[in-house]
Image 1 (tube, rainbow, N blue to C red):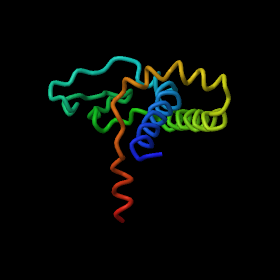
Image 2: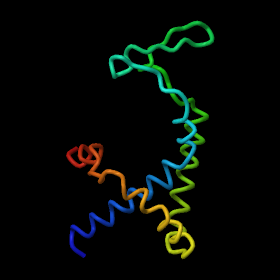
Image 3: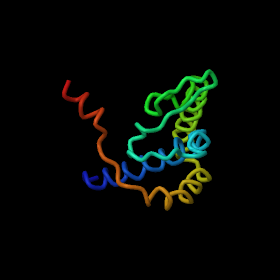
Length: 121
């Protein structure tokens, strides 16, 4: 297999994993809700007032508590595990085929900066 085919297959797989194992998880409920207005565009002008009356800049607010993060990561790990175990199952493959057009509309992936940096260390 040539490098271009490998990249095409890897891109399709990455998008399917992202869609089915990350996007369609508890992340959706965390993403739901009202988005505050920011006139600066970087949310430095947005503040949150907590139950004790503390005013916290939006850029410093934790948007996930530890319980939500743990539940999200558990669901993502379970989805990735299931994806790998069921990859050869015909019913699972049909489900992937149904979702492929959605993932196919996403931007093409690139090598992540984290891995670029790690390879230079």
